[in-house]
Amino acid sequence: MYTTLRPCFGCTKEIIQAGIQGVRYLHEWRHPDDEVWAQYEKLQARLPGGVKQVDTADPNAEWAVTSRRDAATTGHSE
Ligand SMILES: [Zn+2]
Image 1 (cartoon, rainbow, N blue to C red):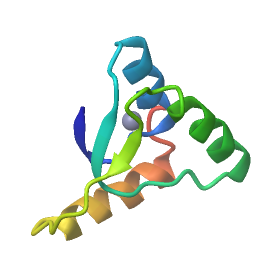
Image 2: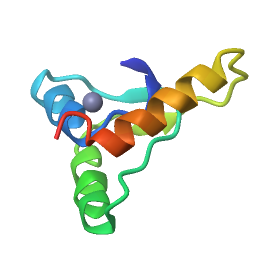
Image 3: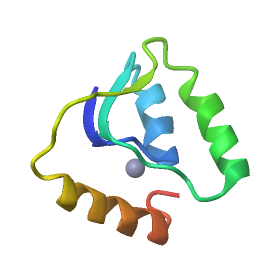
């Protein structure tokens, strides 16, 4: 699966349940709570193909980063 932002906790659960093998994302996302982040990393480790950032230039990066900030502060999908 290819996605603009690293999937949030809720999306990761759905990705695993859907049988997706791995995720490639463009922009980093991090849960602000360290304990939740640790659980999140354990969950993402269950994807056989892993969750990896794609290293490429994004002409719309400003848009994506603004969206990421909004998602983090609203607790998107959790
Ligand atoms: Zn999500």
